[in-house]
Image 1 (cartoon, rainbow, N blue to C red):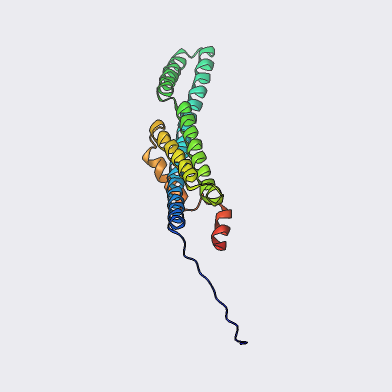
Image 2: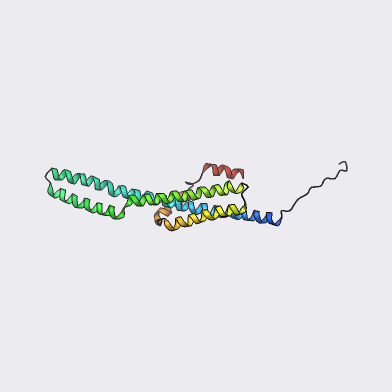
Length: 189
């Protein structure tokens, strides 16, 4: 040592800096909650869409096949068979019309896509936008908008059947909705 003195100055964050830091941490935490909620909702709706797609095929394909058999039976002079098949086709068509599984599948799929959109935009807010030079008020406003959109989707979307939600939950817990990029990002933190 040559007798020189060095001083290290440490500055304490000001009250407003500390408040900003706390607010950004709270925004980040709320984004994580919103992402998780949107993930479960999206996956539940996709599972419900898959269920109704199966119902659509399970009712529609046999109805079409039975209708074809009924017409063949009529042309082959088998009126009893043609009549019985026609009654069955009419009943299955009525069930299909009543349940409307194709429309339900599409409605659930659209809801799942909308929840995925909220999830993606929330992740971008948490991972990218929050690191930008945007003000705390801007970030809070973006989060408020995403939360309001999710709440509106919750109100306007059909209820997720319990079996569809359970299949979605099991898939999520098995890692089906995880990104490889996220695993790498966690290693860097």
